[in-house]
Length: 258
Image (cartoon, rainbow, N blue to C red; front, side, top):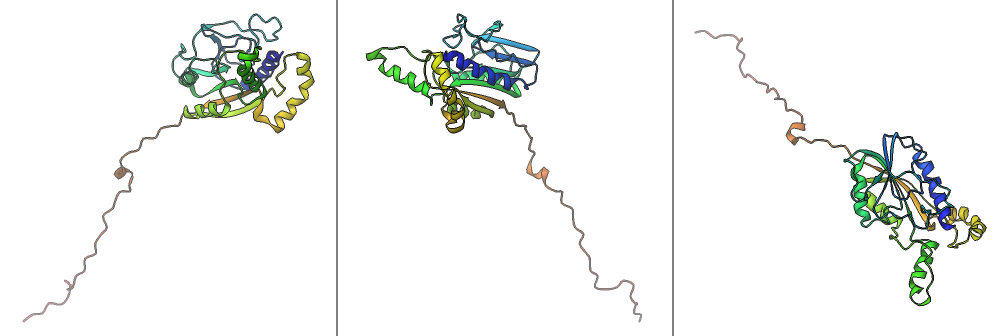
């Protein structure tokens, strides 16, 4: 139930975000149960999965209750080594891809390489400052003595929103939009999740940064270059000023004769 709740929120965010992103080539890396490109109108779209693709509890291929139809896998590729030339993609969708990658910073560098200038990347991730992450941390600390199952999949690493934003800035990305969601408590049953539905609007208004997940869209900025010539070329040319000549005797004056 929590997985379906999270997938529904992320799918709604992606449908709205990618609908008006134009271009020719778009790629989604990972999580086939989230169809991040279904509302996008680019003619060439691919779904790429790594060799150790994680489907997990949040809508895996063996989940018959998932309401999101999977997209056919077109490529098998690792996020840290994408089989695309530089500046060839207009849109890259990363649903929980960075937090499941062995080297998330390298994966983000690879996305920056394959994106065209003004291309966009869409990223979703789990928020380490949330009730869900707090329950996950508590279970991990008490699992040695008391046992119990983890609330979230035991895979990947939480990447905070502030940390991810700093990475994007270092790679010349500009965050175009960002939002948090899924404020309901960390309960397992669908019945209790429905009972806490009133928490979502209150959380978005009063404690927005404590949502269980975040969603952002960033733009790759490439500043134009301007060649600077030598300083002496840019200065104004000096014009030689005329110097007045003063004659003390008038050549047309009277001539004295003896």
